[in-house]
Length: 186
Figure 1 (tube, rainbow, N blue to C red):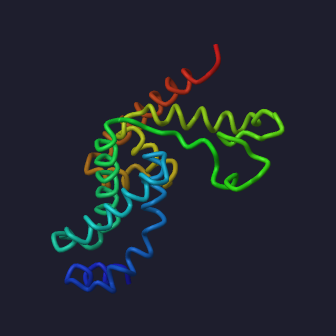
Figure 2: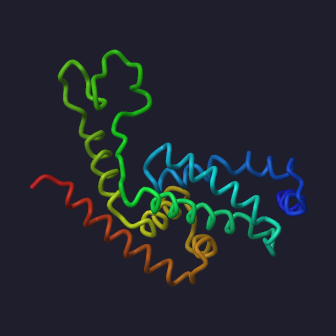
């Protein structure tokens, strides 16, 4: 069924492409959000990816590889977003569930003076450590851990050999561990 949609979209069928976008938008956004760490940037990268995919879809040789092809476009859109920001990154600390909550003060901290719980502190530390990684490291970690893709699927998305994925994944994990060490109090 998806192959037929991809083939129809390759021939210019906008309705078929809309169905594909509807099916893929959540996973594309989730990947972009994990790599970029910011909702607005992830939304921009998601939109950029789908526009680029529509523009380049006629050149897709193998409709069976649509997911890998789209994944590569998403990672490239995230890279472009980071380049546009010149490496500047804002960390969104206050959760969207706290917006509009009168019990919450600035920065998402409770007004009653309570300290955030350990889980929240760890999540903030992880986000900060993850943000320091290169886009390549964030991408490979996001594809493997957040999107739950195996090494072969990641290799197809990134257009690199499986062995390279394995070594880059190990390097990214080590970089994340080092970055997390910087977040721990002395």
